[in-house]
Length: 356
Image 1 (cartoon, one colour):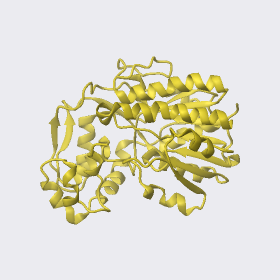
Image 2 (cartoon, helix red, strand yellow):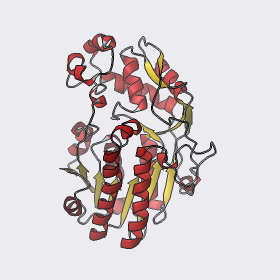
Image 3 (cartoon, one colour):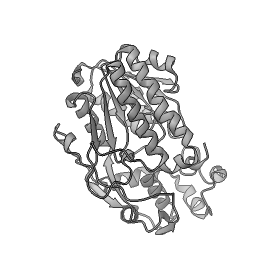
Image 4 (cartoon, one colour):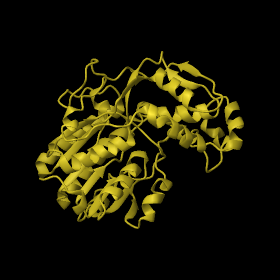
């Protein structure tokens, strides 16, 4: 099966399109696929927000269906006459995966299986599956290539690895072209504040210490959402059939360094860092080898330092000014106190920590 010409794509389906990454994918494809209409499928868990699609809806080229990617009949109907499917739906928070691993298996592995079966029924030409660098586990410090064995060390990474195994088997059975992206930590606006960077930014904005696990020396790689979307388009137009591509930015930083960068970027008095126990197996991640993707003409251009001023302003603005002093005095992140310290249109910091 051949790659696609963006100008000739007529119908795109984006799963998880009301979430952080999915909504940015929708916006990017609207811009670069001028003749396409986009169908969004989203089950609207706690990490999704209809407001993420405000600009997309104004184009008149986007429709939304609320529903689960695990519903075969629904997904089969959604994929009718589709030229491209981008599968961005699923659970993605590593720490939450330790509490409810079964939800990750259902959403990430079984949900993907259902989507691939529906794709086979409809004979969709191409699907891009958004996986994760977490499928590799920690690695051994050297850059990890796409042929590196998958050795996940948490339930989230395991569910993503399982999804990839299902894709490998089913794509051959149904003669499909499914290309896999394995990104590192993607950063940008609209991200749920359970994730590292937005959580740091909102806590810093209200003067609360930033929680750093262990000694903070755990290394992480980062990728701007803009560079991720460019990588996705590159794989759609120039990728190889049923291929897999690592996607990583130029930054490979320890968590304590990220905390210091956030404290420098937030233009208000802040309270430093607070070292905590953290989750099990919270070790450094090896860098990714992105030579395969770069051979297609893609190269990361953004950096965390370059993005931080804009991100600090965006996430800081989500905390209502009048609530900042109240939030600063809250003794813990207990979700039952959210309504006393935030407004409905304000930060999602406390709501995001509910049990689901």
